[in-house]
Image (cartoon, each protein chain N blue to C red):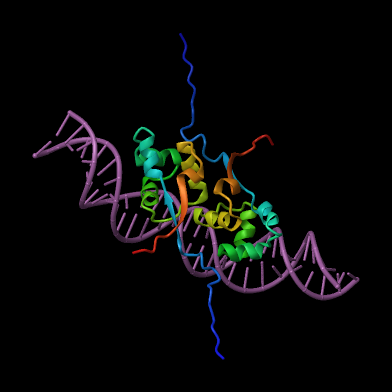
Length: 88
Length: 88
DNA sequence: TTAAAAAGTCAAGTAATCTTTACAAAAAGT
DNA sequence: ACTTTTTGTAAAGATTACTTGACTTTTTAA
């Protein structure tokens, strides 16, 4: 007899996902809205918009909603939570 | 002659919205999942789940996505961004 | 009706988001 | 080519999410 163990990490999903956003795309779909204009409409600084577009951090849900509201779209249209591509 | 000024706040939308969530509902739709179990699956502490359910703060978008993923639903099914009811 | 499990509360500490300021690089207009 | 507008970078401070731990209240179940 022999025994095969398959170890599945408890939190195997964690750390493998990445948040993508279409902010830049929607800015240009809305009359070439600048970062500054979006920032004002969403009630944050331009720097926050820059960092978000660049994916430097994940925004608060509150801010995500405010930006979606500016573009009049749903959260799911603006953000996606995808498996990170590890093929490189 | 006289003059009437109507002042419209620039960010009149801000501060009037509130984030609601269906976390508790989804926990009970999922075989009576406890706060502790949800916390483990989402990779946070139970205290974080408690605070979220109680609406004590708006979670990060990252965490919002992880919880939606646990329940296998979209962000928009789990969270809503509604005008605060000022009728009281 | 008592024990055990789950949910709620509080407070202090850590980590991450967001602001502010200031400047550099790139793009667009004259 | 030069100016102006827009975008990108960086770093320090403020604010807020999240953790940790310890305790109380409510719910479930023996």
